[in-house]
Amino acid sequence: MFALKDKKALVTGASGGIGSAIAQALDSAGAHVAISGTRAEKLQAVAAEMSDRTQIVPCDLTDSAAVDALPGKASEALGGLDILICNAGVTKDNLAMRMKDEEWQDVIDINLSATFRLNRAVLRGMMKQRQGRILNIASVVAVMGNPGQMNYCASKAGMIGMSKSLAQEVASRGITVNCIAPGFIKTPMTDALNEDQQKRITDNIPAGRFGLPADIAASAVFLCSEEASYITGQTIHINGGLLMV
Image 1 (cartoon, helix red, strand yellow):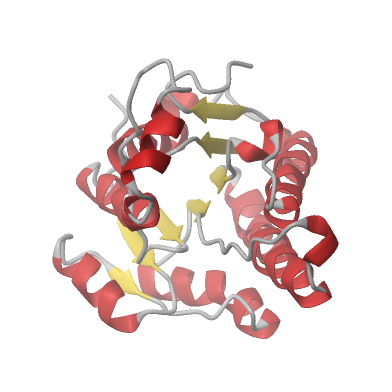
Image 2 (cartoon, rainbow, N blue to C red):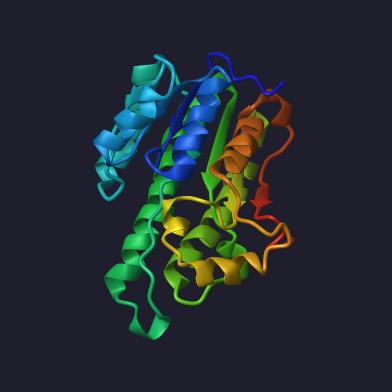
């Protein structure tokens, strides 16, 4: 079950904890994976843990022309493209009254606008082949909000709405569009929290722990599989019960 043999996938933000776990899980399921990010050395390290089917296609998501060209480069490297996973994202936290215009715009540009451009860029090919999987990685805070992250929450909430709209447009062509909204996942970002901060967070999580990148990756593999062909326009919340919707 959930085999992805010979499927061609592009994963952005693949140098991070969640992105690398997703890329490696797709690879283990038999997919040919193109990994993208800005940190070349980290991408090389991720690729070293994957099969020789893996391709590296670096991209700076602040460069709109490079974003538009990325799916084509991935398709050329892989010999096609069946799966797009938009995982890359940034945070520039600040309280609303102190948030600078550029802090707002940079987060919207990378988290939302670049995701839109990537989603749009893969549509023609997927519609022609009448099948495809688009998976956008949102966040629990897109639904619950978070003080000091107005820009980030807006970008991820916009991603969810955008994905629902696109799902309705392309479902008849065999293309599914879904989101995963992770809660607190154990990555280098959460490792930077001190012990008191981690305790306060886990006290509010019914599961009593942070999630693991593998928890997100497993759901990504399922949503990209044939078994998930009747799931579209959905947001899968993976948060240990922190938010139940």
